[in-house]
Length: 294
Image (tube, rainbow, N blue to C red; front, top):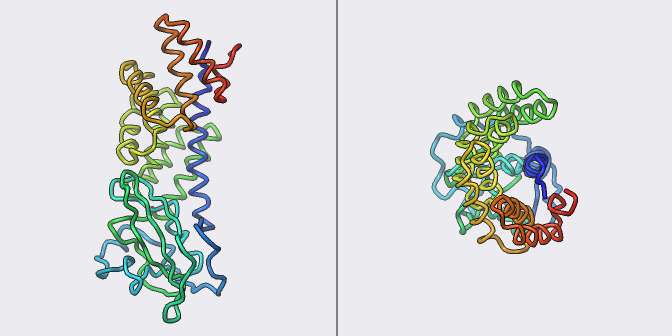
């Protein structure tokens, strides 16, 4: 059984494009938990598209966003896209958002209810927002929004890396980081680029930071373990494989890959029968790299 180098690259690509798709969706649409937002004409508030750390540094009114009577004032039917995929939690993780009901008209305003989930926090924040009132669009509860200029440089970094220009890609992500609050996506992306350009030891602290920002994402822990192994630290890699396999449910999409990686370790340790059985299980689970002939 041979585990090809492409296996890691494909794992990174899968996560990178999955996360990137959230960001791209955030630029032009809002993922909702119910019906589409009301189709009334939008209220144009240009300031909602130029948020930065300075404009959101002032203290917000008491109860802002957490009371139906003091909803977030997004200013346009789709201005909620300012948040989705761009909300940074206090620990740097990216927030997941979902509208939990249809808009309720209150005194002429369509007020929406949203759940905001931060990584590592089992209790969602409840936000109220209106798309038809201009005002302060800054997020409450200590959350921050990644500014548009930082987002543009992040996307430019991805494009440069895909085009084979790693030097420019690293330059663009450094520019993005300088403009944005510390966050999971940009931290993980820089670690990915360093890892894929043979700089595994430099990638380790970025992966460690991504794990701290989002301890709920097992893929971050796997990427960290891979980088540690590539940097010559075998023990943390082995420990991470065992830990993840012990904690993830059998139906988790990472399990077949983890089984394949453990089978490789068993084979390396001379435990050929165990390695063959686990590789067969991984193959049946859809991990082609562990199938016969690979």
